Image (cartoon, rainbow, N blue to C red):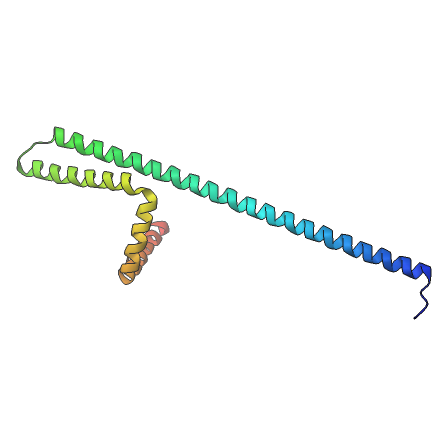
Length: 141
């Protein structure tokens, strides 16, 4: 066995102790960072849920307003003739749109739009290009 002087042995023990303490500190810091990340993700999820709920609530209120407008249109429009027929169709459309907004909200509308795009990708792409062209033209003026 080799002879180790007491000073070298103490230095080795001190270095080992420091290394262990450093590992513990790094582990503790890592755990704290993970906890902070989880907390931030949870808060972001909660904020997103609250925003979605608010948007759905607003859509429901708009839907209710559509249905009220449909009732007023039916009450005030003529019952017969061309104007009466057109008013009835507009009132029906307002009522269906209002009911849809109340039932589905913005979340449901987004889901429906997603499924529509999945079922019809080429027309959706062409519509997107057309809308982009119109927006670009409007911004150039």
